[in-house]
Image 1 (cartoon, helix red, strand yellow):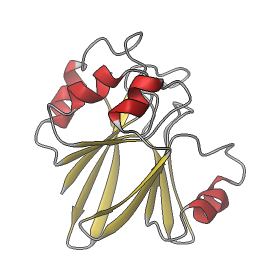
Image 2 (tube, helix red, strand yellow):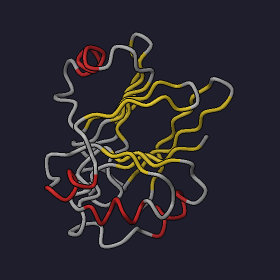
Image 3 (cartoon, helix red, strand yellow):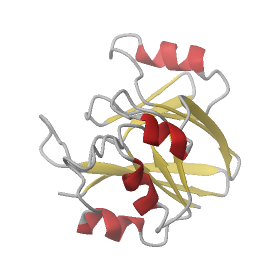
Image 4 (tube, one colour):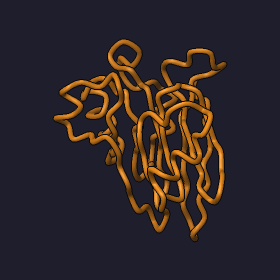
Length: 162
């Protein structure tokens, strides 16, 4: 199973349409996870043209994203991997313990908000922020994530797209 992970796309200001390199990475994925701040339902609708989408609400998402169906959190079983998603994981200090309390059974917790990539494993739980493909802020490149799940193994990669 191949899963694309996006966050903080900030349409239409930053995401006018799917960037070419992002589209290239989305080609052939089985599922797309969006960790909030799509900002418009049109971004999520466009992504559904590539694969089914699960999204959570971000602090900049409006009523149209709520109407699209994005909840505050998502918990999924993806080919045996327990994956949870939330937009804002809070400050860096104490993040792993806070995510463990919020999602005690998750193998992988995906979040966004900071636009800063993060990949950390603690006490058997991995937490991952894909950064932003369109608003890199202080980061050298725009980024997204790719997850591959096969034979009970979960591989998570950060992919530069700008």
